[in-house]
Length: 245
Image 1 (cartoon, rainbow, N blue to C red):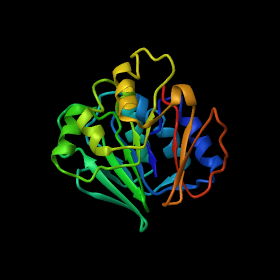
Image 2 (tube, rainbow, N blue to C red):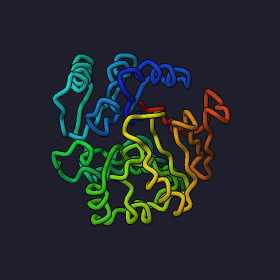
Image 3 (cartoon, rainbow, N blue to C red):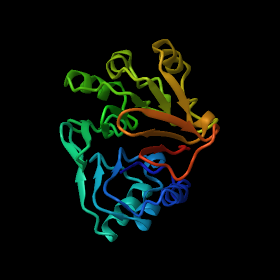
Image 4 (cartoon, helix red, strand yellow):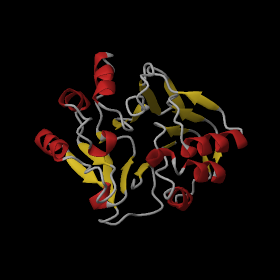
């Protein structure tokens, strides 16, 4: 399963990384939302791997980047569906993947991000896309089980996401911020860093740590970073978080 593919300059790197880990096909590809820094690399991925299903937020964008992704899906005749809160994605009997957002489209591309909670054995992950506080509030109000060991911090550490209530309920041990170095938005915002530090989770940042890899056998997990030295190919179930521009 692949969630997002970085910007247009990241597609080849994502493809290379997957091939280095002996990936030959993808059961599921998810585009959390239509912004270019999340789907720009999708055409390269779709043109290099057999994809069994593609899941989208359902909120389109009037950009050439979004159009290129749809063209690749159409040319490859990939089954296409829209994410809806409450549904599950079937991947493996030992893995539970629950869609937490969107419940209904708001028209805001970030807040309509596909949010997933993935549980493998006793280890759980929260993937948030660029969901902001409105989406987080809806998830909290829906009373889903969102307790997760690993949190992919939403919207690159923007102050518009990761509300105290949401963070408390997710209750992560590890928080990973996917963010480009010296980006023009000032991500991650210091307020979010302070909030995560006060909460006490272990923080990893792709701008400082490079690629971040979480490996789990369903009982325990470990975190490796590019700066500390990665072992490729990985074994067991691996979630790889690529650097975003």
